[in-house]
Amino acid sequence: MLNENYRITPLDAVSCNVSWTTPWPEGASWLFVNGKHARGPYVTGEAARTIKIPFALANTAKLEIHDFPDAETLAEPIEIRPNTRPLLIWNAVEEAIRYRIYHRAFGESQDTLVYDKPAVADVSTYEILCPVKLAGRGGVWHFLRVEAVGVYGNQSTRESWTYFVMDLPEAPQTVAVAEGSAPGLYTISLEE
Image (cartoon, rainbow, N blue to C red):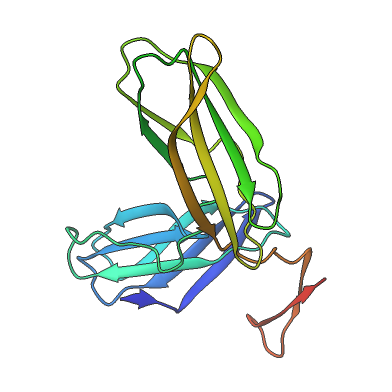
């Protein structure tokens, strides 16, 4: 169950406490910050829970707290950040002395060399993170191509991928926090 009632209390310039009440005191809680696992399974045996997290002043974050009646359930974040650096996997070519990876975003007319490394002996499969962060504002198709290079400099296409990236919008530059209409309430506004 997604717990939407929580309290954030600043501790200092780089951390804060997140507090909430779970309906299952013997159950487990999971905390995600910006779609990434921060804590969990968190089991205290009490309904009231507090976790200290690193969080710098003037930053923004999306928090998700998931409560479950048991500790065996694995939680997944609702908001998964876009994968702007996909894992590239290809089978080795016996005659290759090096590999090159080329990248081109949709609308670009020319491929760009983003990786050029010697082949490694006794490796049957290569796995690397994309050497460049792929742009995704508004949704962008990307084309990636691996070339196996032989001893005489001949290149042959080993693998080729199309990959779609839809990135999140930029975070606001400033978050203004002011006293609210009653004690414990705050007015939060985003400033561009």
